[in-house]
Image (cartoon, rainbow, N blue to C red; front, top):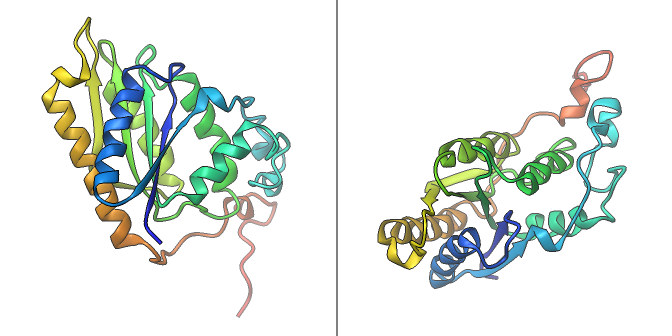
Length: 217
């Protein structure tokens, strides 16, 4: 079976600059032989994280979240888990990721707390800014997703500044960056597919009154 690459668009618009840049990365992945899919978060609304992780860590999981998996996040999580590689794309709002992207990252706690369900999964990260803030937005995605087990593809960080009427097609440097990110994402996914990685005990096991529950010899 071939590789499947999922693109997650965290913009409020499905036809904006962020979606356009994401489509370029997915097209490059498709030309490398992968099947691709774009998921627009705006079509799958879900509430913010309820913070159950702090109250009852053992119940924070993909099937035990107090808010799901029956809400829109459940559908998003299902697609992320099924993908061989993921491209996360966000516009920059006030030097930060969009509220939708932040909400997604917070809800994705349920996909790492009882085991790193995306361990070793390649990712690429995209940020589109009108002026400044793209690098901050990329770092705000990179750190939590890395802790969740995702692996950044080589040159998998792509940012663009959308100023005035400049279209993506006029920005040959960004187009080249998008192409390379998509190609490297597929190349890495092929290398890592079916690779087993070591991981720590599930996070909730460290938060009981006696610390880590490790089986005795």
